Image (cartoon, rainbow, N blue to C red; front, side, top):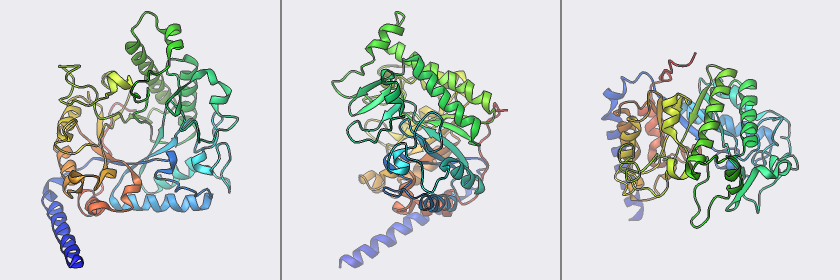
Length: 408
């Protein structure tokens, strides 16, 4: 009996998917440009390389298989994490090889190769953009378990770093640390044919209840009479402004993209510009990232807010935030981050129409030019048939990348 019930449920699911495929076909066939990205996380070996795979040849096979899967599904951009914790997935003059690549921080790949150069070549060979994803301020993933090389910047300049929870972070208020980060970005943009530098949502760290981020010393030194919140935001603003200039000076066609937490600010803190959400933490008030300023100033080329909540979510509804970001992109491109990793995590995400409805909604929202999925690993399981849905319908026809007329 269980077998027949299971078979019946499969039939029902596929019938629903067919309905999803057919209903928007006429509308979607008119799409000419769209960003269709996927994040490939290397931190803790989330997506690539797989845990324990420290052989260079096996890593290459894995990455090619991953690229081919995304190519079949219609993806036209990969956002690959090349600097997860002040380490490198490429030969860097500043930072050691990543432990997530070789098993031990500072140890070179065996057989030797340059993973970044390899990934860029294979990605471009398939007509896919390569966005180099860096975490700006996280320095040690876990102070109790992480492998730390003698050449790691935390051992060379311990005074630049602050311990918060089980991690170490650069002090964003430290001017020498800012210059160091600028050197890292300049090096990559000048040496590699990347299509973009990409930062995620980790600027100042997410707050830990009952613990204050310990940047007291630099605040006393550099605060200049500002209140601490404004000073922290000014630190984040300054590094984004600096990096924007460096990137364009090195390569005028290289994009600079930010993927912020999905809520910029709640309406109770900002009745004019805040969203109708009541999330506990926000970009502006907790991560000290004034994304809207960066968009208005033209410091970044695209924003990819992480809208990992379902329709009707009680704190941060997808539909509310989608509309909000469409109205606050200030002429820069906006790609919506979709949490495909949440498939089957609750009743809403067991609904096989959840993701298709999200795609339809963003395609019908002004000033939204595409989407990015977190993360690559989920597509291997094809949850709810969503990979099939992209391949057979939503991404069936190839499209051009959205224009960025401000780039030379």
